[in-house]
Amino acid sequence: FLYDNFMRGNDQLSNRFRFVSSSLVNKALICREPDSCREYLVKRFMASSTNNLYLWPYNSGCHWLLLAIDPLKEVVYFLNSIDGEWTNYPDMKQLVDTSIKVFRSQRQARVPRTKSSNITWIKVQCPLQRNGIDCGYFVMRFMREIINMNQIEIPITYFDEYKCAHYTRLQLEQIKEELCQYFIVKRLISI
Image 1 (tube, rainbow, N blue to C red):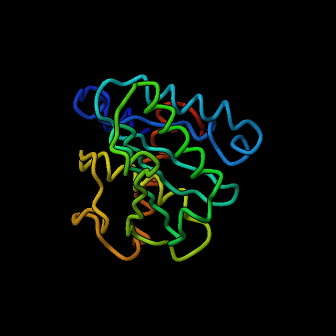
Image 2: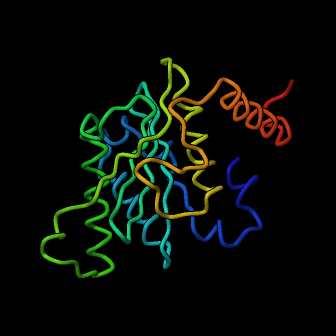
């Protein structure tokens, strides 16, 4: 949906943003097959020769959140619509840290000794949900806004153009409507 509607035909955006498949890397797979998850992430990171931001909608089993990973700068932006910390997801954090270190090693990057074991995690102050069911729509909206801003770096206080404490019902309905229209046009669902 995001690629087809915002990035297709725009080389700048399609060369800047990449996606990590949440069906190939999620909590269940990280616990069951951590090596294959790490290999997938490293392979995704190695596939690009430029500075990219990898958008990974992560499902913890009962909640969606977004990781935006810049593997070259070794920065991970953490966007969570329920205001939790990345420390609440130790398997996910360990996988990302290990994948970035393997990526660093495979591209034979030199980093300062003080940085060698530290990957920068940044908790972004993004809009928060008011219920326990809209997290997936929040993640979709975060990804859309990041792509629309066309920036690899995400401000800690989020983008000024989209800064708010909570999304309105209308803002969430907009992303739901766009998604439904896409599914209908692509004939992924019928009405």
